[in-house]
Length: 131
Image 1 (tube, rainbow, N blue to C red):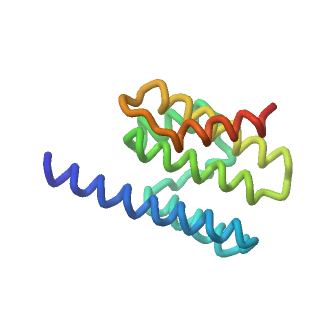
Image 2: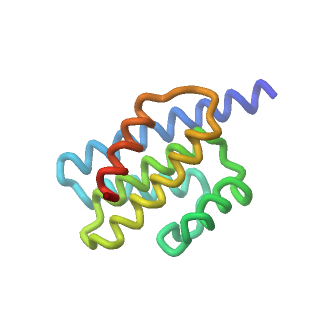
């Protein structure tokens, strides 16, 4: 059990670093490197399905049941989906990413036993995009 927790913590820290790289590239306007990091993020979690083609609930079920991801990992996926929405030039596709991110974050928020100010801020930001 301890080894599994250590592995998960290392993976979460590595995923967090990838999310930070995505964010930095996006803020600098470096779309291609940001999208490369998005691809790397999904490869790391072995997410082989195209998240664009999945509906919101399908995506959640895939992540939770098929991939058996923890709430922390699902939260990271939500952060990446938000960044994909920011990078997307097609407005409707961008909104779809935001909807998926919002849904995942709200689900994690309901199930999580820990409070996260960062999560709350992302939920508020996504709510603004969607209204």
